[in-house]
Length: 213
Image (cartoon, rainbow, N blue to C red; front, side):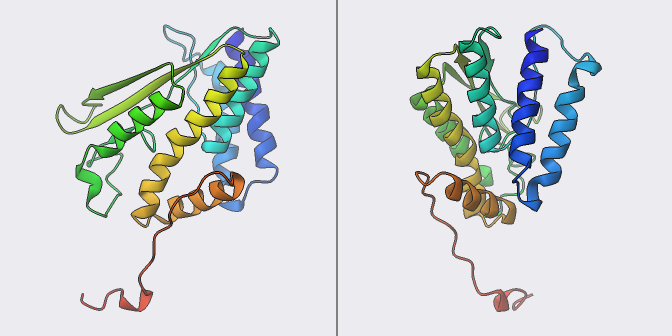
């Protein structure tokens, strides 16, 4: 019952965001709305009552805040937030998640470690570092977190701070590596949240491209 309610809450939040979303992410939001509205019909729940939904920084924070408000109002029980390691900040995996980072840093474990420590300071209930992730032992480092939402004002503060960092840490790294989608995303997030200040990459003159091919 609570799972159906959280599905409905998430769908409502995404629909509200979609009303003013830029064209670049409109389709992503529509896909997510379609998924979360039909998720219950697929009967994919195994073990703990859980649901996966990919969303950007704005979506995750607003959905989490709506969950916490529903818990506070007694509509649902406490909720634990987590995320897959197939995520923008949680994994250093040069043959999968970070394979599109071309600045030479794909073969480091810096981001997963940096991210998990940053999450711990910003309010995660627990954090974890693990290895393998389906790619191979020693080939990847994954960082994860769990955050308990209990309806408290403190949970409101923690979800805002931690989720903002958890997403945009990885977006920043990809932006510095000149990933066009990441540059777009971090600029949009800084416009949405004036407290977020991220250095943007300085692109070289495009006339140099292919000069030495």
